Amino acid sequence: MKKRIPLLVALLLALWVVGSWRAPSDKPGSFPVAEFGRLPVVSNGRTQPLDSLARNVLLQLREKQSVNTAPWEKNPPILSASAWLLEMFFNPALADTRPVFRIDHPDLKGLMALPLEADPEKRTDGKHFSWLQVREKMADLQAEARRAQAVEQSARNQFDRAVLMLWNAVGLYMRLENTVQPQNAVHWEKELQALVALAPAGRDAAKAQQAGQPYDTAVLERLINELQRVSAMNEIDPPLVIAPYHPDREVNLWARTGEAVFDVVRGEPVPTSLRAYAALGTAFRNNDPTAFTGVLAGYREELARQFSKEQAKGAREQQFNHWAPFYKSLVLYVVAGLCVLLYMVAPGTFGALRTTGQYVTVVALCVHTAGLIYRMALEGRPPVTNLYSSAIFIGWGACGLGLLLERIWRNGIGISVSAVTGFLTLIIAHHLSLSGDTMEMMRAVLDTNFWLATHVVVVTLGYSATFVAGLLAILYVVRGVFTPSLTPDLAKSLSKMVYGIVCFAALFSFVGTVLGGIWADQSWGRFWGWDAKENGALMIVLWNAVFLHARWGGLFKDRGLMALALGGNIITAWSWFGVNMLGIGLHSYGFTSSAFTWLMLFAVSQLVLIGFMALPPRFWRSRLA
Image 1 (spheres, helix red, strand yellow):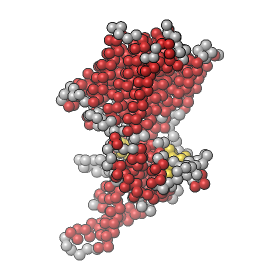
Image 2 (cartoon, one colour):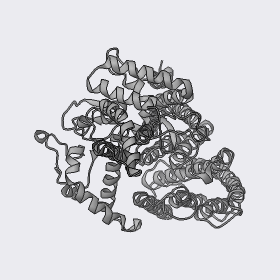
Image 3 (cartoon, rainbow, N blue to C red):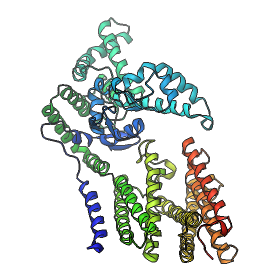
Image 4 (cartoon, one colour):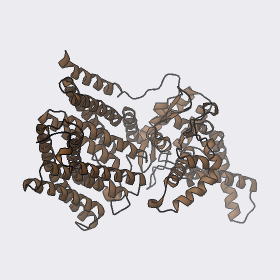
C-alpha cells in the first residue's frame, strides 16, 4: 500500500487539474456573464475576448484578476473579471464605488487624502480604493505625474514610480469606462436613438451654415454638443468593440464606439455592434437577465456570420484564462519541492516522499507543457515571444532537465532543480504579467515565426541549462558550508551533473547565438553589431567555454568549477533580463527600476555564494576529504 501512495497523491493532484478544466457556465435566470466575456474585442493590437481585457486591466489596477467588493470584511462578495466589466460598461455609477485601485505608498495616500490604515468602520482596508475616492484629488495627481514623467527613469524614486503607476491605472480605468458609451450617459440607448434622429437635420443645418444660408441654430448646437461628448471618448483611446461594418471598403477594421457614432451622423447605417451594446446596457440597467440574454444571443448570431473565428478564439482564450495552467503548475512545483525537502531531511524515514515528489513533478511538467501548447495555439506563435513567455519557457526547460537528472541519479537533486526553477520562473512570469497583456502584438522586427521557433527557442534552452547548472552549484555550496549532508559521493554526483548540463548549455547557447546572427543579417543587414543583447549571448557562450576548458585542462577542481557555475547565473540573468529591461540596445523593452533592483540583489547573492565557495574546507560543515 505504501508503494502506491506516491502514485495516488499524483493522481489526485492530476484530477484536481483536470477537474478545473470545465469552462465557467452561467446559472439559469442570471445574467450570462461568461457568455458576455467571450465577445471579441480588439485591444493592444490583437483580437481577444472581453474576459481577457477585463483580467489584464484588473491585474494592472489591483494585481488580481477578480474584484473584492468589500476587502474590509471577512467574507466579502467577489466579482469575476467579466462581471466587473459588465458594471464598468453599463452601470458606471456602481462600478465607481468598487475598490479596484491598489495604493500602497503612504506618501501617495497622503497626496490623495486617503486612509493610511485599515478601518472597517470607515469601510476601508487601507490598500484598495474606489474611483470616487481617487478622483477627488485628480488635479494633484496629474501635477505630480507630470513632474515624475520629467524625471529620468533611472532617477525616479519609489514615490515617483507609485504616482506614475496610479496615473496609468486611472487612464486604463477611464478608457474602459468609455468603451461602449460616454461616461456621463444616463440611458445610452435612448440617447443614441435621439442622436440618430437628430443627425439628418443636423447635417442639413451644418451644410446651410457652410453655404452662408439660414439654418436651425438650436439643432446644430444640440448636434455639436452630442458629438463633443462622443469625441471625448475617442481622445482617451478606448478598446475597439465595434465589429467592421463596411464590407465594401478596402480598409475594413474594428472601430471605437465614438468613431462609429461619427459615421452614423455622416449618414452611415447604425452598426450592429453599436446597437447591440446600447440594448445590452438598457437590459442590464433594468436588471432584466432575460432581455439581456436575448440581445446577447442575437448579437453573437450576427457576429458568427463574419467573425466565427474570432468568437471561437474568444471562447478558447476564456477557457485558458479560467483553467490557469501556469498557476496550477506553480502549486504543483511547491508540493513537489516540499516532498523532496522532507526527503532530504531524513532519507531513510521519508524515502517514499522522493517518489511522490518525482510523480508530482511529472504532473506539473505535463500541465506546464499543456499550458505552453495551448498558448502557442492561441497566439499562432512559437513558445517564446516576449519576456513573460521566456520565463514560462525557461522554467519548462529547466524542469525537464531536472527530471532527466533525477532519472539518472535518483537522489532527489533533480526534483529540487525542477521544483525550484519551475516555481521561481512562474513567480517571475506572474510579476511580468502585471504590466499588461501577455499575448501582445509582436514587434515588427520579431514578427517571423521561423526565427522565433529556431533562434529564440534554442538560445532560451541554453538559458535554462545554464541556470540549472547554477542552481546545482547553489545546492553544492549551501549543503557543503551550512550542513553536514554533502558527502564525497554526493559532491562528485553534483559535479558530474553540472558538467553534463554545461555541455548542453554550451551547445545550445552557441547554436542559438549563431542563429540570432543570421536573423540579424536578414533583418538589419549585418551579422553582428555588438548590441547589448548580442554581447550578453556571447558572454554566456564564452563563460560556458571557460568552464569546459577549466575542467578539461584541470585548471579547477570541483569547488572552482562550482564557483564558475555560480558566475554563470549572473551572466545569464544579465543577458536574459538585464539588457531587455534596462533601456540598452535594439532588444530593449524599457527601463524598469524594480527589475534592476532584483537583478542586482540576485547578482550580489551569487557573489556571496562564490565567497562561501572560496572558504577553506575547514570552515565547511561537510567533510569532503
